[in-house]
Image (cartoon, rainbow, N blue to C red):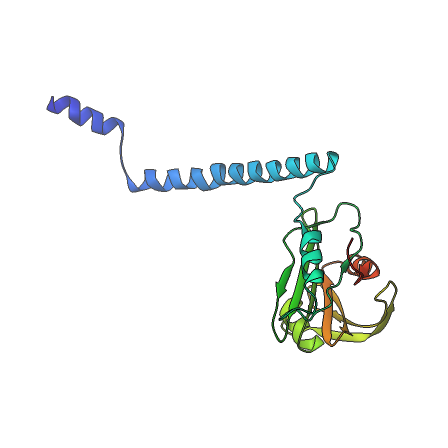
Length: 199
């Protein structure tokens, strides 16, 4: 019995080198395989949703209506802005955020694919403070830019070293800022902004 036990232990050596080799195999083979499977699942689901006319979108319209209907009530003193329609392939990747009170804030986030993103914030504070919060710790203010749409007019442009872009303006006593990694996307959302009651 003792001989068998010794042979068995020889067949399955538990050495430090064996442990390291197992960990290398795990990192080099298994982890990339798991990540690839996860990415493929997300891409396949997103493509299927688009083909079916579906998305992972949040019910942002319901939140817009709720806040608009509560306008003028205690703690609700903000005229929310939102895109009257979304460009093709875009969706709200989270519920809009509303913080009531003396200095209310309104936020919305939209996404497309793996890299498209546009954020919107309406709230107190200066344009620079919002740009520092959302774009970069040291945002670069550009010139004044004329943009179209219902909320068109003069906007201040913002950018950072990483290529993000943003535009801000004063609106109803608050500061409105939209930003994202692609300038054309941000401009398109600004052109679609409205503050009309959502039907």
